[in-house]
Image (tube, rainbow, N blue to C red; front, side, top):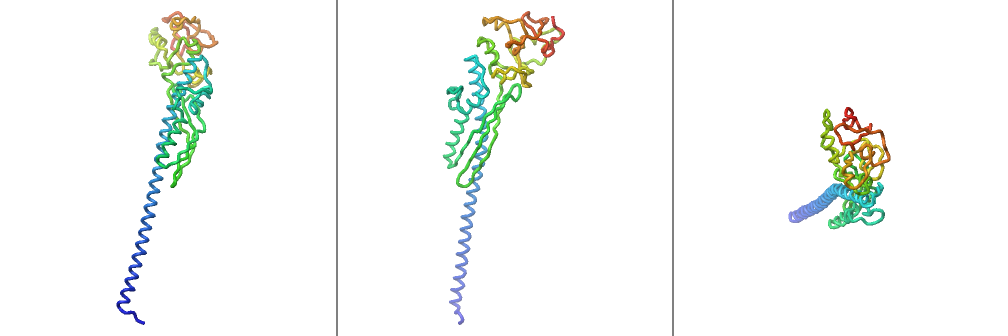
Length: 305
C-alpha cells in the first residue's frame, strides 16, 4: 500500500531524527573518549615531569647528604684521633648513624629522610612514589673531588600510568676546604691543615725559593703519587693516581709543643714510619728537608746542600 505524503514525511523525519540522534551519540561518545584520552595524556605527561623533577632533586640530595657525611667522618677523626672506614659513609648517608649511633650532622639530612619527604609530598597529587635505596658508594674521582653514587629503584604510579626504573645518581663533591685527617692523626689533634690547591705553578726560579717557602707556609697541596683524600680519611697511605700532598711547616708543630723530626717534610712521609734519604736545600730553613723522590717535583735538584 502506498504511503501518504504525510506518512512518508513522518517516516523520513523519523529516520533523519534517528540518524541525528545516532550521530549525536557518536559525537558525544567520541568527545568523551577524546576528553578521557586527553586527561590521561596530561596525567602521563605530569607523571613524566614529576619523575624528571624528582631525579633532579635526588641528585641535589645525594650531594647534600654526601657532603654532610664526609663532614661527619672528618669530625670523627678530629674528635677520636682514629681513621674512618669507607663503609661509614654509606651508613651516614642512608641511616644517619656512625658506628651505630645517631649523628647530629645528619639529622633530617640523610638520603632516606629526603626520599621519605618526597614520597609524602607525592601523595598530595594522588601519586604513589616508592624509592628503594639499593646502595651508596664513594670513590676518589680526581685529586680534588670524590664521587658519590646512589643506586635507587624508583616507582612512580597513579591510576593512569606508571614508571619504574633503576637509576644511578652521581654527584661530585670537592675535598677542598676539608681538614686533612693525616695531620690530625699525625699530631694527635694538635695541628690541623685545610686542603687547598697551591696557587704556584713554579716553586723555584734559579736560586730564588720564595714561592716554595710560601707554598710550605701556606700549607698548600699539589697532585702527587701520595695518598688520596679518601686514603687519608681511612688511613690508607698507599700511592694513588689521585694522590695529594703538602709540605709540613715544622715551626707550627714546634709551636704546638710537638718534637720535630729530621726527615722529609712531605706530609705522608713525615707522618709515617718511612724515612728515605733526604736533603737540606739552599735558601731554605735548616729544618726543611726533601727526599730524593720529590727533589725534581719541587724543582730543587740544583739546590741540594
